[in-house]
Amino acid sequence: MDGPDYSFEAAALARGFTRVAGVDEVGRGPLAGPVMAAAVVLDPADIPEGLNDSKKLTAKRRDALFAEIMARAAVGIGHASVEEIDSHNILRAAHIAMLRAVAVLDPLPDHLLIDGNLLPRGTTVSAEPVIKGDGKSLSIAAASIVAKVTRDRIMVDLAQQHPGYGWESNAGYPSKSHISALKDLGVTPHHRRSFKPVHNILCPEKQ
Image 1 (tube, rainbow, N blue to C red):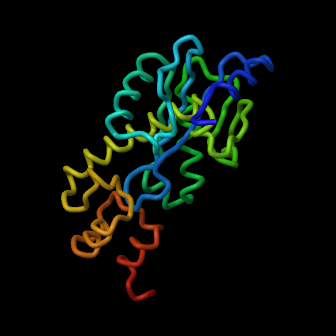
Image 2 (cartoon, helix red, strand yellow):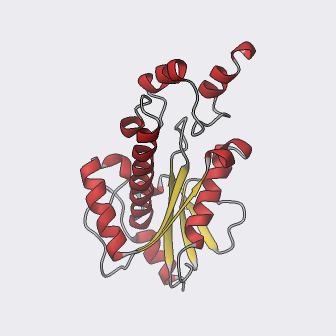
């Protein structure tokens, strides 16, 4: 098995569901920026070629597939803010972003394939978790691409407002240059204060 296929979707359709969405999130690991999620309902007769886990694709390929998915599938995008990440926790915030992505699909899906091993609290439609789903399900792979490209573009915009942290290339992840910039330039409003490297800079006396 190399790469995702349509078997999870086909199985759900065979059980009587009519609109199956793949759902994935990106941005649980960064020290800065929102967590982003996407929900995608593919047209089984018009699936873009080459869908895969976004981490296995080049940025150029992701951008090309993003445009195809947006043109040929139903797409919902949702995010949870840095404030929400800090007040809940990153997993709960990721789940909130997923529910928001699903909620903007119109019509709503009647079954969800959700990447990971947990279903978001508050899911109101039929759903199943798919562990490592972005490498197994074409719909989840499509959602991973949409979420990743959307988030990367947001981080490029934020990098122009807050130069020096390298967000245009590290997307807010804790690269060496990002950590050293945090120490030299300080914490921005877009940094997640509940994350240890940021917290330690804000509260050095507690170390």
